[in-house]
View 1 (tube, helix red, strand yellow):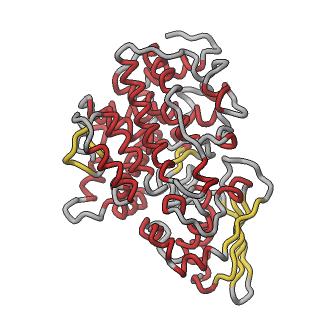
View 2 (cartoon, helix red, strand yellow; view 1 turned 60 degrees about the horizontal axis):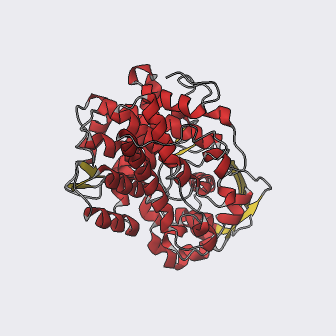
View 3 (cartoon, one colour; view 1 turned 90 degrees about the horizontal axis):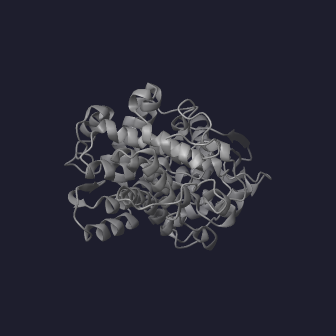
Length: 450
């Protein structure tokens, strides 16, 4: 399909529909595969959370199909239901992938979740699944970047808004859409965007944050299934006068949607999170990890830690005594305190049960989050100042950590992380699953992924 220069939605749809793995550089495929492996691992660990258990129980009562939930091999669901649970489980620990610089997107928990359900429903090959995932990543992250992360200051939760487009792109590619049908799927997905930030300012009810991700995966797949049956949607949903960007965003840049398509790979901007908490806590926690290694820092050595970050961090992530379990890992003080008292890379260290632990609460009370004047929602850099009980003061500025595009995980790191996430069931073989996922493109079907 040819498109006029201003038809951004049509151009992006045509690109997603036409993406083939032969046209994708090997290092881009590798990065996508890493995200898939990481998402599957996180989803399997996510089944242990209260919200994960609720989602599994709810979906298990739904209709029968051919798609599997991550972590549940014995239940077959309609693809939309599987996408919902996959997305929610993959976001259950606040550990799933993002884009760096931040753009209000969760590529793994939304795109991989939807693509997995779609590919299993159609008994597609690992190669087609991978094509769908990369198409979804490229669409999702371009839309997220185009918003300039300006939807959340208005009260919208960005991943719930952008996510359906990425999920629709992934499913549409797996279904073999042409450009026109893909654009209809985008048009429908635009009416499925949803998510509000009230949980963050209210300090409770943060289970809905998990819901937003699961629904984004579900809604994008639903949009693609409707489009496949001939249901139509607006063809300028992204750039239109009453379209997605103009309606939800305080500011945006249309050109970002299509610049460098097929040459500048957004997939390379994937960030694999290091800790099971909100991304705003990652840089101060990494500072703490460095101090632990360099200074042999112990919890009892901390008199105070002051985290200098963006206004968003101070206003929305600075709660010292969260009471909502799902809200706890949205709190920088609580998350840093958990990292000080356990292995930061292990979700067990951030167990919601620690909300009542006196040691953690006392440490969190010593951690302050203050604004350094930056207004950005996309900048994760922090400057942490540690004052020790002996009076010594240390300072560390952190922008990157292992897992970011400039500091990717090694294969050994990824394997170790996978084992931590999936090694809870003695009847399962994490190493075998890891090896199969490493050669995903050679699989004739992927119904073994769960």
